[in-house]
Structure formats: structure tokens, C-alpha cells
Image 1 (cartoon, helix red, strand yellow):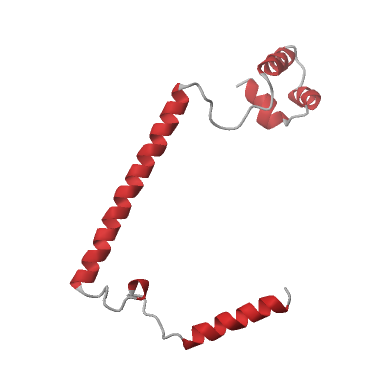
Image 2 (image 1 turned 180 degrees about the vertical axis):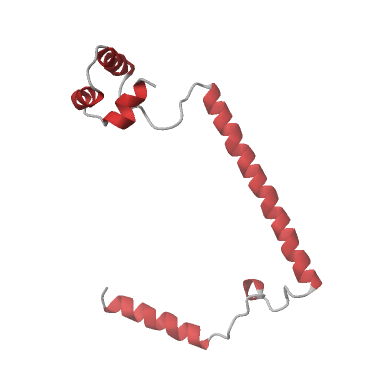
Length: 120
């Protein structure tokens, strides 16, 4: 980082030094909104209820979207390493007695995570 960065850091530090200290219970630097009073606590409770309601609406929209997408036939999750044809071929070779390591090596996949899982 060059001198430009140093100038920005100094300017920010100097600006912070001239501001009055902030209390944690002052919202948006508004001294008339004191969260230690009953009205301030009620305001926070109201904001909390609004946020909770919005979170519920977000979850509903997301779940509705997932349901609609699944109804269209979309598959979720990671794509399989092997195609259906390759999986059938691997199962056939395993049933013929070939080791899962040998089968995995020909398909260039991991034997535990991909091939051994095919046999159940």
C-alpha cells in the first residue's frame, strides 16, 4: 500500500478524534432516541418484530420458489461424477468381481466416495 493509503488512514483517524464519543444505546447518533427509557425499549421491540416478520416472509418466498422449481423437475445438489451409463457399467464390472479401486481408476474418480457408494 502506497502513500495514498496512508493519507486516507490519517484522515480517518483525525476525523474520528474530533467526533464525540458514542454510546451504545444511541441509535443512529440520535440523542433524542434513548434506548434506556421505556419508549426506547418499545421502539427496539417494534423494530425486532418488524425484522422477525420480514424474515418469515423471506423464508416463505424462498421455500415457495424451491417448491415450484422442484415441481418443474429441477434436481438440487451436486452433479453426479458419473453418467447413468457409466454408473451401470461400473456396477456391472463390480458384480463381475473387479475391485472398486480398479473401476474407479478407469473412470478417474475416487473409489470410496463414488464407486463403493454404487453398490449400496
